[in-house]
Each structure stands twice: as C-alpha cells, then as structure tokens.
Length: 159
Image: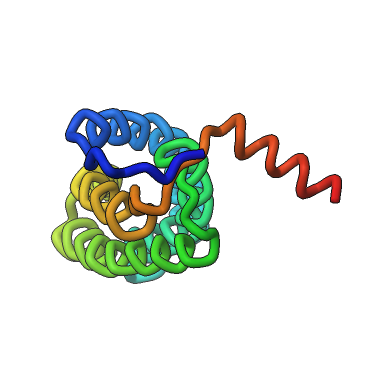
C-alpha cells in the first residue's frame, strides 16, 4: 500500500491508467452493450426507445464500473462509500448529457441507434476517465495492489 505522492502525479502514470481504464472499460462495455440490446428489444413501441435503453443500461453498469475501476484501473484506497457516491455523481452528469445526445441523434434525428451508442461511448469515455481519476479516486488517497486487496478481503471475511 502506498500513499506517497510527493514526487507528483506523472503523465506516464496517467497514460498507463488510461490504458487500464480502456481495458477494464472494454469488459464493462460488453456488459453495458448486452444490457442495452436486451432493453432495446423489450421497449418496442415506446417513443424514446434508444434513450430509455441507454439510460437504464448506463445506470446499472455504472455500479459494476465503479468496482472494476476501483480495483483494477486506479487500485485506489479511496473509501468505498465516498468513491461510489463521487463515481455515481460523475456518471449521473454524464448520463444526463449522453441520454440527451442519444435521444436527439437516434430518436429525433433518426441516426442508427447503434452508431449513436458507439459515438456516445467514445465521447464520454475519456471525460469519465479524467473525472474519475481526479475526483472519485484521487491519487492522494493512495493505492493498493490487487493482490493486497484480495488478501485484505480474505482476512476481513475470516474475522
């Protein structure tokens, strides 16, 4: 475990974390997309079908994303409750903006809903990374390796 940030947060660290964010995000994205397709198929006939499917899938997958990024991307020691609240606040802001985008481009303008989904995902992905790194999981909270976190989890379960 480390809380030493005296040497500053380097750009190469940010780049490495962004690569991890993309890898972990790909897993989260598959789950998100499967939920989107499932809800889209269930919502046949409603006016804002794409936007409704987007928002429901986005909210549910956000909780999974928080845990995955906390453990694997940022290896953060940020308190769970605080980081979850901050993550959900960030994701909620992104949800509102991206749902308006989905509704306008797919439901109103008639662009292919899958292409709009992909565009939204790319556009809001990097913004989410920056907000998560510096707000929800600040480097000043310290970090813990996955191995150390798993060992602490095992110890807590035994006690």
